[in-house]
Image 1: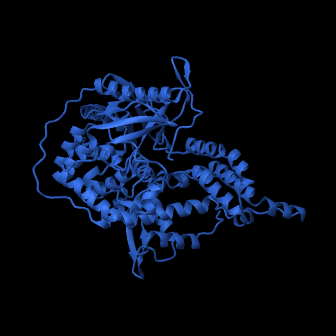
Image 2: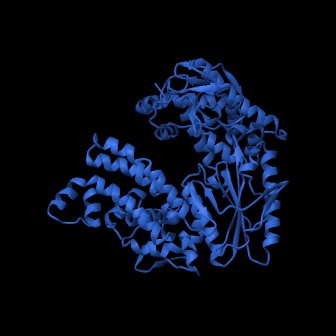
Image 3: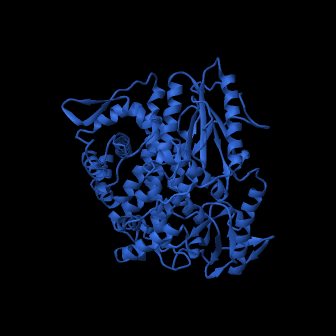
Length: 576
C-alpha cells in the first residue's frame, strides 16, 4: 500500500545504470543528504542564543480538536512505517477519538514526540529534466498518519495566534484563504497602480536552494519564543524537529537510516507552516515604501519610480536586495543568486538599459518574469502567459482523446475541465480583462474545439440537414462553459472571498476602501473605479465595479457554497 516509485525508474551512477532497487535507494539517500550537508557547511549561519521561559500552562486537546484534525486528513493510501494509511484513520476516526485524545495529551504533557513518528519513509518524486539523474528528483516524506492528525492539532493551536501575526502579512503560501492567485493579484494591483500613475516599477525575485531542507531548529525555536508562543508548544515543536531519521524507499527496498538534523518535513502537515514562521521576518528593516510578497520560499520585492529618481530608487533596491540576501544567509538559507531575476515594468519601455547590483552580481532586466506560475510581461500584457497556457492544455489532448472512448459524456466533460480547461484558465482572474482580441480569439478557438468534441454526434446530425451549429448550441449541448462564462464566475468568486473576509490581504483593504452599499440592500456591495488609464483595469480593484454589477442577488450574507450555487444559476453557459 502507499505511494511507491515504479520499478521502471533507471538511475545512473557514473554513467552506469543502477538496476538494483536497494542500490538506487542508497544513491538517492546519499544525494539528498549530501546536498543539504554541502549547502549547510558553506553557509555562514551561527546558531542563536535563546531561552524558553518556564511555564506550567498545559496545552490540552479535546475530542473535538482531534475530530476536526481527522476530518482535515486526506483520504490517502500514503503511510509511514506504521503502515496505517490516512483513509483508515478517517474511516474509523470516531472510534479513535478517546484513545487519540489521551495519547496526544500525554505527548503534550511530556513534550516528547514518539521516535516512530520522527522516522520518515522518503519517496523520490521526479521534477523535470533527465529522469536518469538523481538531481532531478525531490524527496517527499511519508510519515505516520496518526502523527499527521497530531500535527494538525498543533497547527490549529498555533493559528489561534492569528495567521498574519504568525506568518507575517507578506506571506501567501500555506496561509488560510490565500493562494498563488491572491499573491499574483496583489502584485498586479501594485504594478498597475504604478503604471496608471505613469511611473515605472522595479522588481526582483529571490530564489533559494533546498529551502525547506535548510530550516534550522534553533532559529525557529527563537522565533517562536519571540512571538510569545506557549512555551509548552515551543518545546514540543523543538522536540518534533530533533532526532529525526529517514530512509529512502524504492519499491520494496530501503536505504540505510540517515539522521536529518536540519529542515522541516516535506509531506508533513506542520512543515510548511513552520517554514512560514521561520521566514516571517522578511523585510523587517526594508523602507516602508517598498513592496514585498512571498509564497513559501519564493519572494518578490519592488519599488516604484519616475524618470527623475530612477537611479536613486535603483540604488535603494540594490541595498534592499543585498540586505535581503544577507538576512536569508544569516538564518541559514542558501541563496541561488544565478536564478535571481530583475524586471522593470513600464508602459513605454523606459529604463531597459538599467541594471541591478546585488553585491558583486550585476543583473540585467528581463522582459518577463514568471511569478508563481503566471508570466508577467514588463508592459503588463499577457501574450507569453496565454501562449504557454494554451500549449500546456493542448499537450493533454492526445490523452483525453484516448480516454474518451471509455467515458460517458458527463465523465468526459469532467476530465476536460480538470485537465484542459484548468490549464487554459489558470489565473484568469489576473489576466482576462487585459488580453488582446487576438489572444481572446485563440482561447475561444481552443475551448470551442473541446466543446465540439463533447457534442460531435449532435453536430453531425445538424450537418446532415445542412445546418451550421452556432457556438451557443455547441456550448449548451456539451455543458462546457465558454471563456466569458468561466472568467465571470472566477471574478465573482474572488470578489466574494475578498469582501467577506475569506481572503485577508492588503488587496482586500484597498478594495473595501472603494466600496459603498445601496440603501435598498445592505447585502449587496457596489464599488467605485478610480483608475486613470486603461492599464489600471489590470487591477482587480478597478474591475470590482463591473463584477459587482453582474451579481443581481443579495450575496454578502451567503456562505461560499450557497454563493457558488446562485452564481452558477445566473451565469449562462455561453457568454460572448
